[in-house]
Length: 70
Image (tube, rainbow, N blue to C red; front, top):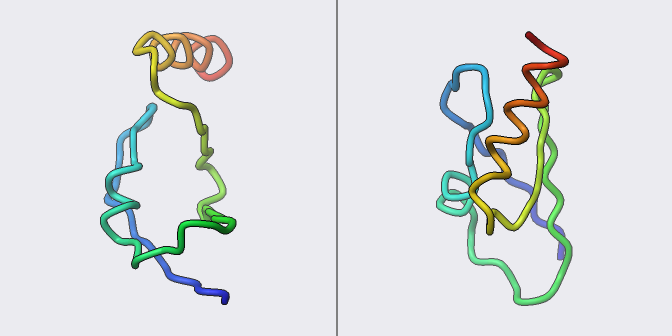
């Protein structure tokens, strides 16, 4: 079964933001097995998926982004 929904995120300032709770709250009940595709329509947005186990990950990503996008 294929199911498609649109999720609208609130506006964010430039930076690295956790959006998993926002997305999970808007999802319908999903089966235990399957594939989940997340497509971001915004051309200047990027998506990073990690386990968020180490809080230093966000600091490292911010530092790297500052080098390439001051």
